[in-house]
Amino acid sequence: MSKTFVFKFGGASVKDAGSIKNLSEILFNRLRNGLVIVISAMGKTTNRLEEILQIKYRQEDYSSNITILKEFHLEICRQLFEENSSIFPIVSNLITQLEKQLERSLTKENYDYFYDQVVCYGELLSSKILQEYLCSKGYICVWQDAREIIQTDSNHRFAKVNWDQTTANCQKQLAPKLKQFPVIVPGFIGSTVTGDSTTLGREGSDFSAAILASCLHAQSVTIWKDVPGVLNADPKRFSDTVKFEELDYHEAAELTYYGASVIHPKTIKPLANAGIPLFVKSFLQPTESGTKIHHMDYINEKIPCIVVKDDQSLLSFKVTDFTFINEGHIQEIYQGLNELKLKVNLLQTSAISISIVVDRQDFKIEKLIANLQDAFQIRFNEHLQLITIKHHNPITIEKIIKGKEVIMEQITRTTFQVLHKPASS
Ligand code: ASP
Ligand code: MG
Image (cartoon, rainbow, N blue to C red; front, side, top):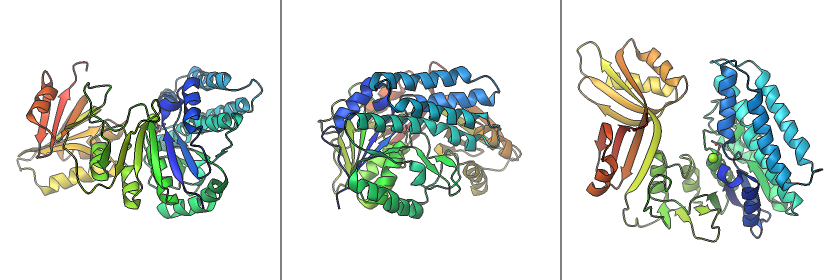
C-alpha cells in the first residue's frame, strides 16, 4: 500500500490563473497516488458569498454580486482552458445550483443552516477547476466531494466532526481511490447524516486536511501558504519577524488559540494525537524548508510571539443587587456563552463586574445580552483589537502598547494581553 500524504492549498494559492499555474508547478514532481489535495475557495470567494447572504438577508438585489462571482471564476477558466473545455458548463452548473439555493427563504432562525448551503460553493468551484486543470495538463487526478466523507453534526457554521463515521468513509471511499490516483478534495465543508452541507468554521480547510490525514493515518500534512512558514508575528503587520524551523505541537496550538491565523486552531489536535507532522511551507518558495510542527523533546529559545485579533467585542456584566461577583455569576455568564457557542478570548473579574472579550458575531452578542440583561447591567464596546504576546519581555510590551488607547491588560508569567481601541475606529 502506498503512503498517504496530505497537501492543503489556501485561497491565496488559487486566487487567479497565475497562482493556479504556480500550484500545478509545485505539484509537477510531487503528484502521485496516495496524495490528497485539499483546496480552499479562490481568493476572497468566501467573503463574497457571505456578502451575498447579507444582501439576501436585507431583501435587496444580489444578482449583480452573483454575476461578478461567476465572471471571476469564468475569467480564470478562460485563461487556463481551451474554449471548448468541459470546465465551462461545470462552473455554470454550480453557479445555477447556488442561485437555486439562494431562492429559498432566509430568516434569522435558519441563517446558519442557509449559510452552509450557500458558502460551500466556493470550495466546490475551486476544487473542480483545479482538478480539470490538472487533468488538462496530463496530471491525472480524481475529485472527491468532502460531503461524502466528512460527516458532522448539524451545528451549522461550526460543525463538529463525527470521527467514527468519517474514518469509516475515508477507509471505504477515499483509500481505494488513493491507491490509484491523487485525489482533490474541497476543504472547509462536510455534511450531516441527512446530507445537508455543513462548514467547519472560517479558514477551516486546514482542519479538513488534518481530519483526512488523521482518518487515513497519513505520513504528513503540508499547508502551502504565502508566508515562509510559522513566524513569530504576522509579517503583514510587523517587520523583523523570525521564522521557526520547528515548533512543538503545544506551542503551535497555543499560538492558534490566541488567534495566529497561519493555521486554523482545530488543526493541531488531531495531528498531535496521531503523531502526524505538519509542515507549513511557502508556495512562492516551495523548495525552502518552511516550519515543521511535531513532537519535540526539548523546547527551543523562547522568542516573543505576537498575535493580533481584530474585531473584538468587550462585554461588561455588572451585578445590580449590591452583592459581589461569585461563582454563580460566572457560571451564569459562561452558560449563556456556551449556549451560543461564543468563545472567550479574555476574561477579567472585579468585585462587582465581569468583563469578557469575544469575537464579533452576527446576532450572537445581541442574543447574549437579551438572555442576561435581567441579571446584570451590561455594557458593550465593539471594533476593538486584542494583542497577545507569548514569552513577553519588557521591550516587546513597551513597543506594543506605545501610543495605544488601552482598555484592558492582563499579564501572566508567559503571556501578556492588551485590549485597545484601534485609531481608525
Ligand atoms: N474558504 C474558507 C474561508 O475562507 C475556508 C478556508 O479558506 O480555509 O474561510
Ligand atoms: Mg483561506
